[in-house]
Image (cartoon, rainbow, N blue to C red):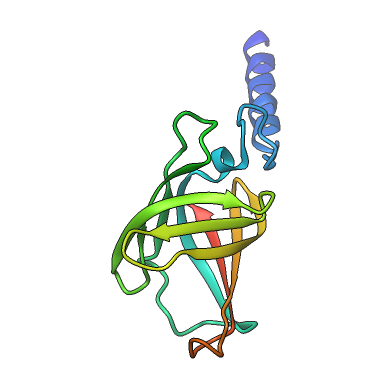
Length: 146
């Protein structure tokens, strides 16, 4: 009988801990960079508000290295594009934690609006000036950790 009670108690404790959700306000992290650091895979793309169903997103990976020390405001990143091309550089969070800035070592800096962030989902939006560069004016990335 004691074993049954112990098993039921362990099962309830396990289920209870599995249902606790994380938020972006992780107490052990001194900054939002700490929450964002890690590996992210691209799961959805929206181009000018329309879901892109033609691209194979499986190759895209973005690895944001944790700042060291944790209070640093810049760290390194590496990325594999949808095409398979890789790049790397530095990343930071700007404008009162609302913009993810990527500075690839071989390209112009990118400023992505952080639409939302949880430990399980990152939504980034970039607005492009189509008067300067042809193509879509808005690109939205939905990423999940891997």
